[in-house]
Image (cartoon, rainbow, N blue to C red; front, side, top):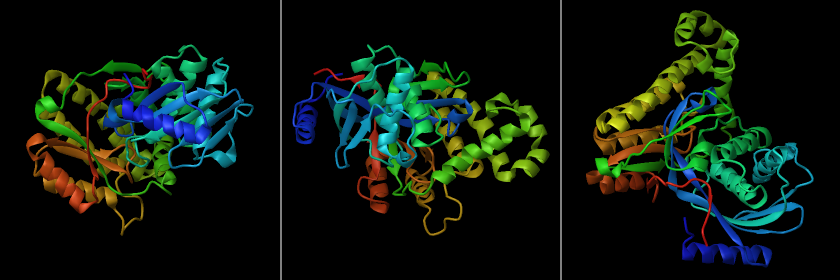
Length: 398
């Protein structure tokens, strides 16, 4: 994949302004869209995900300083001393934590990480629901793997490095889907049953050929102060698993779960039980979605997308944060999709939920009307029309 001339000029100008030199290499990592498997990855379930044509790009040059310096456009420079590769409490939930975490994991794997400067620009906007954090982590991992480790790690292994950085250094208990989709590229079905060796199965499909566009709608909600909401989902799953003495819910037979519901309601509460119901059904739904796409049964695929959306809303309960009354942004976005699609296409909450985005599959003959309606009700360019990107995290040809 070659770097576009305009982007190269922008990156070189930004790098020169930040570091007073010219870069020598260029890298890119895409955002991702979750198509199936809402909150199934951290339970070692199945997902269907795709890399999208929005990415985070970097111009890079070794600096010989024993430090990684990253200047992201519009943000303060992040400087990470490579002599300190353990979690820093005050850095949690910050960009330096992600950089330090990625570098630390590479060091643990035997890589002699050296200092470099990077100027970064991104079209994967924070809070867009396309996982800007995963794209950034994969970008850092791709840079280190290419420049200092002879590309010894595979793309899935880079994804695991990225997840480690987010879990251990950044402090967010995320699953592996976001990083894997960004690192690998294209559209893939992933089974996380074996956490060390996830099964990645490419899924070739062209939504446009079926007369639909993939849209991501920014609800306008802010992720700030919602960490506890996201953590509560994994906590509920952990409580369910603790009852059975298991680590993740995919290790618990479905019949055992349903047989134990009376006891689970007392020990874990009804919300946890509802979330458990979502997990079992959503996991099976991913397999059905992949089968539908491979058979070319797009109507069945759309029905499954709608089912996923209903399950997330009713059972997983990741649309409206607890206690929110005046601001229910994602719910409003879903309501607008229902109105403007007029029983056609499909829509669902996208990604983590509570804030961020909604995903919609929109018939091409109503795409412009749909986009105009969404943009008019929410904000200019709230509706993003996307395509699947074949490449994952890569070094760009210059």
